[in-house]
Length: 165
Image (cartoon, rainbow, N blue to C red; front, side, top):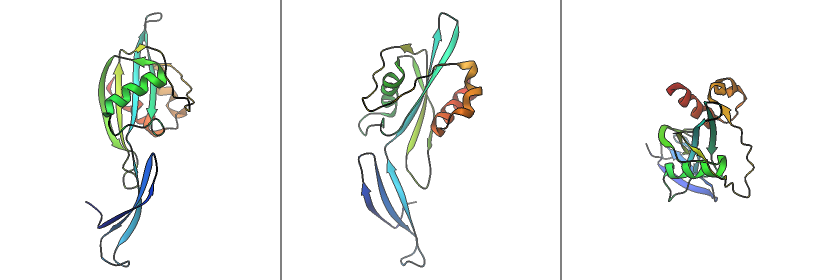
């Protein structure tokens, strides 16, 4: 479905806001709502094996503005770039685990969840304005740490990974 009318009320670098009018031709029989338009977001679950202790470790990264997807890059290209920049992990076998809207009806942000197995350490390349606390966790400990994670995209990524393993 599409709104009967739509007008842009804000245009920013990362998001824009449209006011949409739905149904009817007058104020009494129609409804208006503001809807945020944004770029894509990605969640990456990077898994690497540790030779020293023969266990698997996971790094979970999520990227939303300001580390947002580009209109010219594919979602998978954005995910691969972000995992290198933020976690210093690259390569491996990638698969798309899920795609979902973060807040349907309010925002059109489409989130893509990728799982990357067998990634290898590389040099981190964070952007100057990013503050990232990198914590690597043994895969067996992921579930117990979930109550501490406050980002919904990261939780969804972990849940999809844990369901598949």
